[in-house]
Image (cartoon, rainbow, N blue to C red; front, side, top):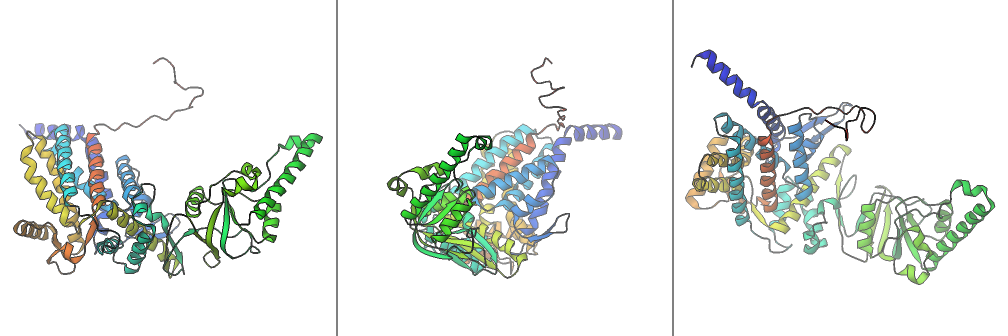
Length: 524
């Protein structure tokens, strides 16, 4: 073949794979943006917006969710990383780095002539092997008093001992049953404030203040009413007020509202939380009676207060119920007070145990990063309780990579090449952690592979301070197994989705959706 023919052939291949190469480059760029943060020696990233506002962080999901990304493939990676954060609360950087390695290896195989379909087939099989091996290596914790739980918090909390202690204490307060409940997220209990004292409050903290400063600042052992509505009289149409009957109806509703408020006082309600606003007449009457009112509470917070106090939220029409019926909707608080410096309501209920992790910071610039660190630690602790732990530092991934490599022979045909996508992805975390620590990743990875093979211990990894081989279990470097499994599964989903895209077509903009020029329902 002449040079001209070779050049033409190469051009045709590149043109045919243009979409794949474009998407692969975008994924690699996203991975490159966060890989430098991986491991104990990972560095921070500075994010700057167009107004000059700066965020300095080591948190992968923060970098991914705030960075500017216009390429569709890049957005896919970011969305999957966000889903990882929502699902298990940690591991977004690992997901992204693994996805980058899978896609890069897959593209290399395609360029060498392996059909995309065979690459995807092998990738799927390799993922199955890897997830099976990871699950087998998970070691369950022996309750919330297990000292390994603190090590998980410390690793995920980037070495911040004060935050790790707070997170573990909060986990023990809420209990194992609550931590295993799918709807509960320990990370949602984290509150970070400038000037606050580090503590775990055995209750809830609402980002709200009293309705006015004349209401009591602190109450103990009070009944609580939750109003999923406005504390106002029932509304009447403005036009109806112009009629005699309408005005009479308005006056009747006002009187009824006053009687309803009197019922609350008769029932000794000391705390009222509303989802919407409060009428002036209600504010005046309840203030005089020494009732604390907190308005415009978020629905999520209302639900949490309901669980914590035993109250049942009602609408304003429910206030018409008899005192005996209304009493069944009330909850109880042991203590409620406002911290004026922080402008927050602290509430300790008599229902389901709850805890709030309060993380303090000296300056406003540090508050956000400490909150992110605490949320990562909380997510990791909850994941460890649910699914156990594995050795960290990239050691377990490397051990699994070797097992997957050995099982390659079980796959016939060219699909076996696709398994390499998973093998390379599993090797990537340790290689990147070592590189970020300033060592040669190829050299150190070879040392660890040899050491694991000779000793049979897949917990061996690299000490990022000395470069020596150490046992991660003995060193207390532990990661939640669920985070590892979810990260690998999510990376595989990204890689397969990217490899399957054959063509990129820009969608047309509808000139007038549903209006003139719309082709909806028309003949083609």
